Length: 425
Image (cartoon, rainbow, N blue to C red; front, side, top):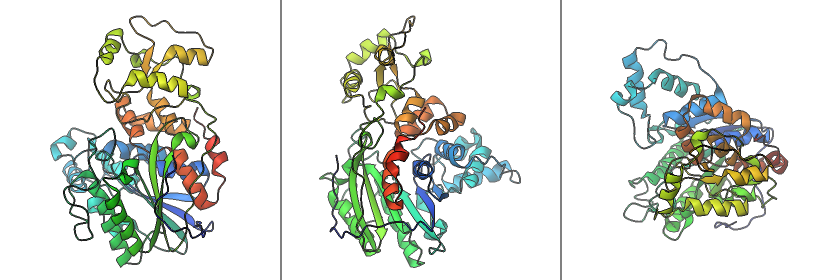
């Protein structure tokens, strides 16, 4: 699954100076899988800036990384808090900015407090280069990640291209209208950083591997060429979670850019020691089980995804299919397991469930484990989230072991042992 990007081999591998503290700047940060990877590696880092517009993701980021519940809105009136949230562009549905009326029905003070606590810049289209706070580069290594929304590129989405109508050129680079045009907002921010001599030393992009498919490769090359003009060397590779310690067949493209003329090293596959059924729970709540009527209905579906067939394949391979934001929904993207097989694997008694089949959804906890999230952080993540929110958060994130491998190489840390020692249970 390793696909090399375009780069002359220089054999001069980039390494982060261990004497510098790493400052993480996470654009489209979600719950902060990049910071989790640094934490699990034991790196000297801080979560320095966040840019995330979804209120539920901002909450999760605070619960997992910061845990600051100060009432920063105490001196503000209700109208002032709502004004600030509308001006910031906060989203309640991951798709569009929330209206004042929509926000008024939420715990808007908590949303505001979470934004302040996490140093969140909220909407990437409103961020300026100076907002990143890149200073004292002789003392700090700035790592900027940009996992821009992949819905328009994903095989589970609409299969649109990076472009809207015409091919991207340097002249129209900021005029694209589809959701993936947010990538070009990152370009604008980097241009502004360059103007004040404050470019981050390392950039890390993550996206679905359709990003370098035939329909998109020309536009990706424009992006890489743009980064080169800013002084970055870029290399990308497809990395599969199950080849880096977590039993999920999730393949994502990781692009690493470093300032200067360097080669960039990517991880080689490691042995998969943890199997799918190792991380599946026993005696889960009956709400996750399907009825026979639901099973009969699924058999008639004509959707691209085939959850019952995938369930059988997963049993054979002991690897999960790729999780999505719809993994827990009663929809084509759901992920199912036969609990009798799990019980046999663990040599446990098979439960009797009245009016239920033995086929069930993955639980949110299991999805967290399949994203490489440690048990303690899974518990923190669930503190202010519904099951639906958790499925979305996990399905929209990055497997931490993949990031650990990439960061571990840059930091010259033994990432393999750290991956094997993630406390998933």
